[in-house]
Amino acid sequence: MTKMNLSFYTGRRLEVAFKIVGNVEEFKKVHKPHLSFMVILRPTYLINGDVTDIDLERLRADGIAGLIFDLDSTLIAPRSGVLSDEVAAWLKFARLHFKIAIVSNNKKEPYLKKAQEVLEMPVIGYAAKPSRQAFFKVLKEFGLEASQIAVIGDRPLTDVLGGHRAGMKTVLVWPLKTQVEPRWIKMFRRLERCVIRS
Ligand SMILES: [Mg+2]
Image (cartoon, rainbow, N blue to C red; front, side):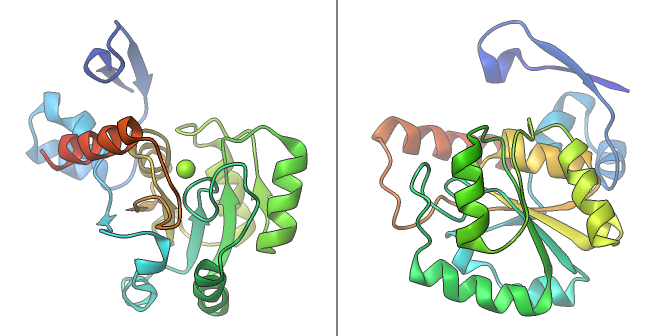
C-alpha cells in the first residue's frame, strides 16, 4: 500500500492510501518517491488532439484489444447526449477491432441510458474513478488481461490514475474539438498537462 500526499493538487491537506499495480511499480524503482504520484498520472499515450486523433492501428500493434472510454468530454459533450459524425465514424472503426465499453463518474440515470442507446455500447455509471471497481467489472466482461486494455479519457486524476491503478494502459486526450469550455477550465487542463510532463 502506498501513501500519497495530495496537498499540492487539492490545496488542502489530503493523504490517500492506494495500491499501485502494473508498470507503475517499475517506474517507482527508477524514480524518486516524491515523483511517483506524477508518474502514475502520466498516460501511456499522450494525444495532442481529441479521441478521433488516436491512432487505433498503433494501439492494435501494441497489443491492445479492449478500450474503456470516459463519457463526458471524451465521446460526447457533457450533458448533451449528442454524438458527432466525426466521433461516430471513428467509433465505427474502433468497434470492428476492439472490445469497447464506457466507464463514467456520471450519476444521472436517464442521461446514462441515453448515452448507452446513442453510443451502442455498455455504459457503467457511478464509477467514482479513480476507483478501480468499474474497470475490474469491464475487465471480467472483456475476458482480457489488464495490460491488453487502454483507458481513454480527458482527466489525469480520474481516467489516467484509475486506469493505472487497475494495471491498464492509458490514453489522455483533449476534450472534443467541438466542445466549448470556459477559459479557466482550459487553463486548468494545460496546467494538468504541465504537471504530468514534469
Ligand atoms: Mg471526461
